[in-house]
Length: 424
Image 1: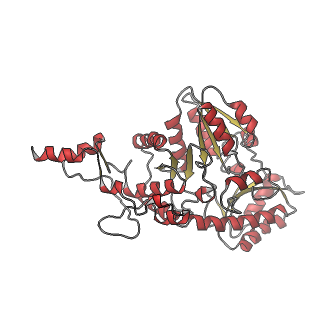
Image 2 (image 1 turned 135 degrees about the vertical axis):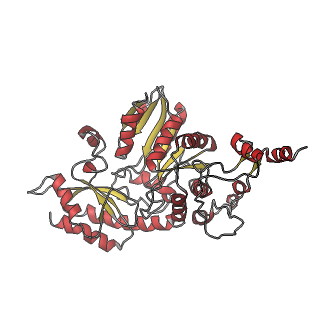
Image 3 (image 1 turned 120 degrees about the horizontal axis):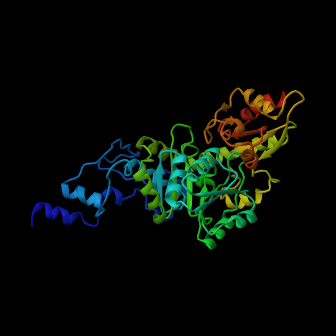
């Protein structure tokens, strides 16, 4: 037997060692914080303690037969960093463990994750049923591009279970929602939607960006796929772009194939940043939520605020549901919308802009999930591409302000918001 033949036989049905081992044995039922710090890592022969960054586009094989085995699937290992990279894989493994999913697939951005979902699970002639209350770019993707390629799209109020049930069609293949939603932090009944989907052979996809697995695990509630814009809380400091999908091995293989073929790939450096961000996710979310609860109480009691959209308030219509679905006690997220009353000299939009422009510390930016508190006017930023009718259906009024409560001293956040509210 030749040397090449022996090498070829050796590679059949084998895994590269870095695909086999994990620094943490997840069968031992570790807690979330332990998983967030240690899961997913494979240590190299260098014995590094912190996760390494593998900035390489390609990989070296021991022989031509070894290369062929990697490419034809006889051997599982790194092939090309567009779809296999050790740094990205560490992030995927850790996020999957935190979400109680079998597998995660990382993407270049949150919108890249949503596009991957569409390409993996929808085709011409299918129906996508989504909530009215979505990020503006998601609606744009569905209406302008998925519809262009023959996918029928319709929307219902996220909190109206009867409307969800009535809108299901024979060709409905995916139900998609954000919970909490952008920008009003509205809550979907994930358990109800799961039952509806299972009864009709539909995939339930939940964007968990605002809650994160620190507060909510949609897969545990019956969802099939979880979507993340990792750019937000998973990083937590507004540094890099990324996205992810989490679910079963079978569903994630379909998503992986899209990323592999379409190049919607996360960079190794960004994956490393997200991996380090996950280490403090639970701790950060606890602090975010504590601040947000206090800010919401300030806003709801301010005479120049007409409405506060935040499920942490006891009189919010979804407060009980959010309490049931979010496993962190007192954790309702840190994103809220609040509506400003028009003054005698200004309309709702001008009043909202006055509050935003009066801040001295809070950042005026469209990003969220940052350690820094951010503020924006959705009607003229994140949702400006929507028609007036679409904005109305999403509840995005001219007087609405979206606030992402950060980790500063809460007294300073409240003081900064009061500058504009008190002077209306």
